[in-house]
Length: 325
Image (cartoon, rainbow, N blue to C red; front, side):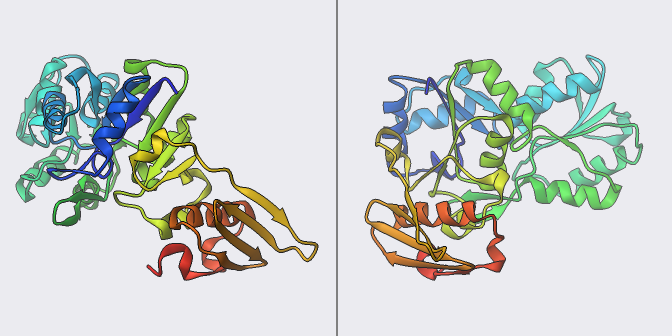
């Protein structure tokens, strides 16, 4: 790999706290690859994100950061004329990017905006969502959402994300926006255009945004289990949301990825072994034979379940595979 593209929330940090081993692992990766930081969070400017990461000890400039706000403005530029008035539903991380692109920012539908762009801010309230709804009552007004994340990880737990706020406006206006952030292409296209490289790798903590998006644009992906999605969600992942690699934390970036050994008995029982962990599957029944390491156990289980072509809800899965979640 010559370019490492990584999500932030749930991968590098959770709220104000760095995730263990992430800083050291990314610093090590930067010695041999360009590292780009990709975030669906539209509430902060790239320079603010870079300064946040620097406080953990990472060497980062604003040019190393691609936000969904930047991808959203790239979309805006294809939808309305340069210099148009745009109603921004979001915070400084979005308004500053819209203004820098030459648009006139408003927060009122009474200014007859040519478009609406919506991104997350913890300060958004009913009044802001109502103004967006009033502007979008005109079906000819384009609507761009920076992202549709339903939740975000913070210090105290999992909180509602921009997708919930977009949904509130959707319920009022009866239509959906075009989306710039993961898993949609615009943010990946923006990152690849910025960082180049021939062998990129994308790291994320969410199957529905990070991994699905990387798969859709043909980038190998890593799911790290330090954020939103855990073992149960990984086992149930649909074909478009399955990571190339599964890591417990980012230390695994510099470690050899274990090989999955497969075999099959004449009676149709299939086996997958990773390290000391072995899982067997016969028909719809999936059982752990040797526990081994929990992460290797998950890797073995996913190999069998994903390759079976069977839906997870039709399987009898050993709870040991997902820690009894």
